[in-house]
Amino acid sequence: MTEAATMVADDAAEILRLSRLDRVTYDREREAAAKRLNIRVGTLDRMVEEMRPAPEQPRGRGVELQAVVPWPDPVEAGMVLDRLAAAIRRHVILPATAADAIALWIAHTWVSERFQHSPRLNIGSPAKRCGKSTLLDLLRATCHRPLKADNISASGVFRTVEALREEGGITLLVDEADTFVGDNEELRGILNSGFERSGEVVRVVETKGEWMPVRFATFCPVALAGIGKLPDTLADRCVPITLQRKAAAETVMKLRAPGARATLHNAARCLARWAADRRDHLPLDPEVPEAMGDREGDISVVLLSIADDAGGEWPQRARRALLEVFGHRNAAEGNAEAGALLLADLRTLFNERGATRLPSTDIIAALEKLEERPWPEWKNGRPMTPVQLAAALAPFRVRPITYRPPGGGAPVKGYIRDHFEEAWSRYLAPAAPASAN
Image 1: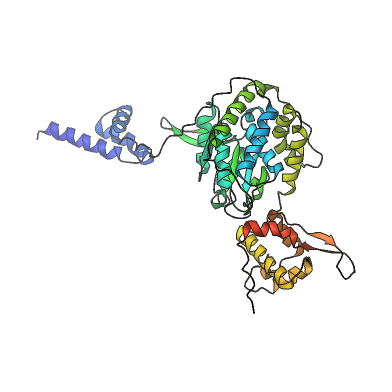
Image 2: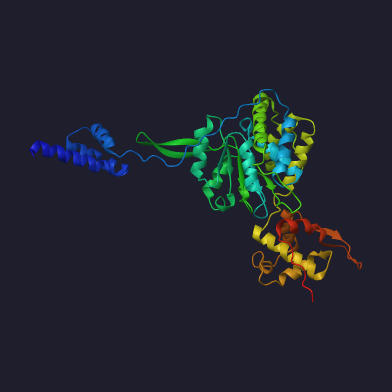
């Protein structure tokens, strides 16, 4: 090999070596290397860049959001909301007021950019198999540009929101939120930020070799489904919905049933037409019930605006629905497994005593004796209190009453057996019949 050829080979080897360095190390060496090679730094930069391996193509599939063709004729908002609420109740078990709140939330995803806040929808349940995934599928069929994720990172949220913002935004539907949101402080912060239209985060990114601060939008409608309680700061921005497990005598329509998907698709088309016609005419300052706090008012504005614009029964239905769901915001305490266990222990207690009603104090005393259960050390190592008992039973729609004992005496707080029957049938296996002696 000639001397000239050897020099060319050596130069090529050096450039190859430099191309394999990380960018920070290369930046430290580039000037000295260019001097050794007797070329300009800019020339070396181009040669090194050409030698760098092409970035690995991302695996997975791109995000494709299906466009909805608006209904050809003008539609009445009240009629669309009626049909949405009815469809929700056909597919999942929940109170009528909760179905109304969900219908309004779905409608808000089509007009959220007009309002200051986008309330999160918190789909919870006291136990598994209550229809959370079914409801998420229903939302996916009716919301504006839905994107469903069973897991997502903080950067996944803000980069996706920013990337798709100019195309019309997204509605983010998160399943299994209880498995990863609570422990991820950064993700919680991003979801909290996106509650407000001005929400954004700043990240420093490399642009043409320079590190520059870049803003990313975070504002978009979000629904979160899971078992148990969301972190307080996130729950504080939510419309809380508690689903119920189907009882033996109840029926729900499967989404795979003939015509079910078509009905939901037509509802989405009607919402698209309604949004195009009415978005700019929706009132921005509807009357908020005095019973609501400031944050609940922020959550409710867009939903009440939609209801007021719909007219008919919807202004009253919306306010009744929101007051109802907010009344249950803090009812869930403890985890789902403990809730079902508590129901089972109370059924045993009522059966053993042959009682139709029991005072709260008697129930607490009996629970304290169950050493293998969590009740004797329910919170901070202390036994469950009557207030905590009521909170643990509230998601099952069982509440204490005040009654006078059969033998007379002062009124007491307690529970009636009949009030448990529905919860027992939904969440527990049938009790084994008593064995004959």
